[in-house]
Length: 188
Image 1: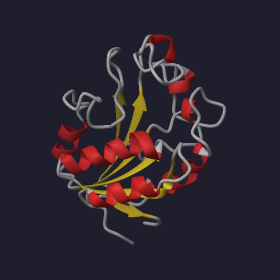
Image 2: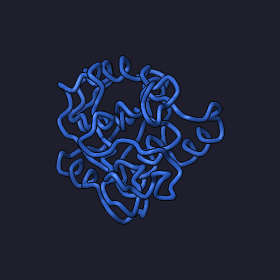
Image 3: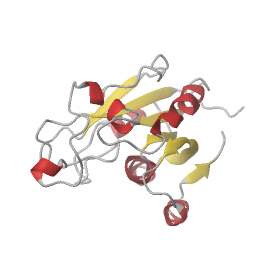
Image 4: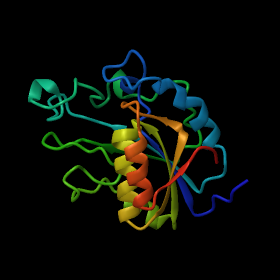
């Protein structure tokens, strides 16, 4: 079994609105829960879960001219974690996408790449050098988190078995991530 000292598991946006029946459901999104619950038991130094935490008039919503249906409105049932997700190992929760005028796919920065969520500072304070990213959706928030983790200097893996994406074919995305130094792991 790998040694996860100085490692953090980042669980990205496993929220009711991204699961089947939710406002912005990722196909088979609920299938990430069991693998994530297993991963969170592997002895990571920290387990961080993120939540989209949008205001009701968020710029990404279609009614505001954005591309997405309204989802993950702060403190709503859709923004909650599903009951099947084991939150006991979670040591920190990061809210993202809270500013009305900009979105935040990454767990590290808003999409302006300047406004920090505080995750980088938190992980450095915990002496984390390596992260494993999992969650929803692989081709948006998981990928943005992995890319920013690399930019911040963390050794970065994506646990593919604990992710689901929106697009069917991820071949080009996987090539791009590998070229940036992200390790794609089928199994840990």
